[in-house]
Amino acid sequence: GAAEYFKETITWSAMTSGAPLFRLLPHGFVIGHKGPGIAVPADRRPWMLALLNSTPAARILRQLSGTLDILVGQIQQLP
Image (cartoon, rainbow, N blue to C red):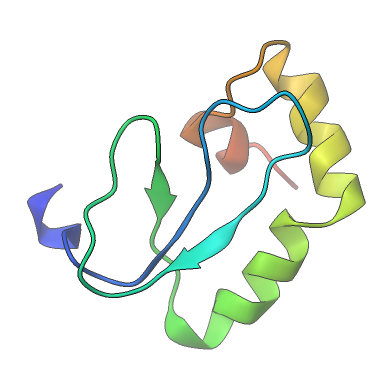
């Protein structure tokens, strides 16, 4: 919601034909439906980015998605 606007967040391109690329979006930006984001405490961001950008996570997301879209709900399903 609006409370998350302009905060540092992890984001990715919702549509990709390759492996998803997760990155840190700095303060001052607003996430959207084609550039979604997840709020992660600052001390967990490096760990979360490493996990999300790993080969196992990419393979699981490919199986969960079935399309070119990577949705927030699919990220939530990662073990």
